[in-house]
Structures are given as C-alpha cells and as structure tokens.
Length: 83
Image 1: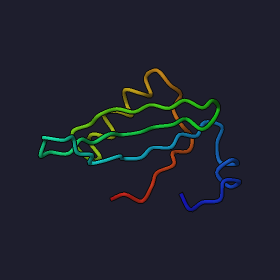
Image 2 (image 1 turned 90 degrees about the vertical axis):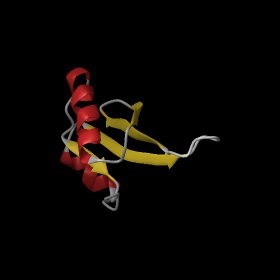
Image 3 (image 1 turned 60 degrees about the horizontal axis):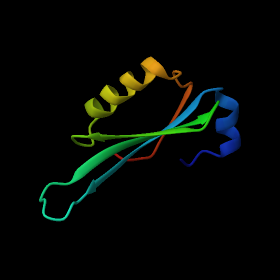
Image 4 (image 1 turned 120 degrees about the horizontal axis):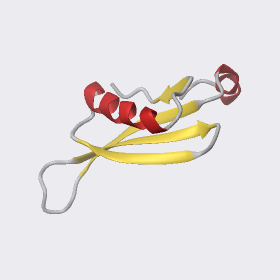
C-alpha cells in the first residue's frame, strides 16, 4: 500500500486489492470470525467479502481462484503487509 497511486495506475489495466479482516468477535463466542475482502479498483469498482476459516495463504488462494473463474484475472494485486 506504500506505492504511489500513479505508479500502480501505470502497471496494469486490471487492478485488485485484497485484505484480511479479523478476527472479529461475536458476543457469546470465544472464537473470532475472519473475512477476506477484495475490491476491483480497475477496470470497474466492485467489492467482495467472504468469510474464511483463518488468515492463511491457503484460505486466500481458495477464495481468489473461485473469484477469478467469474471475474478478470488482475495484472496488479494490491496487498497490505499482513504476514
């Protein structure tokens, strides 16, 4: 997320950003809930959010592979620095 927006705009025509959200806690439950949020920034603005089991690479890939069956494969994928 530290790249200047102008540099990202020149890298590709299809840009998607992803971010892990969570854990969020629901009252009365001891385990947190995790989500993977995705947003196409270009060529159109379209947001998606999916509940996942945990913040892992395998969970993210499973969701993204399903997304990319119906949506364009991004040329640029913006991520935060979450390990």
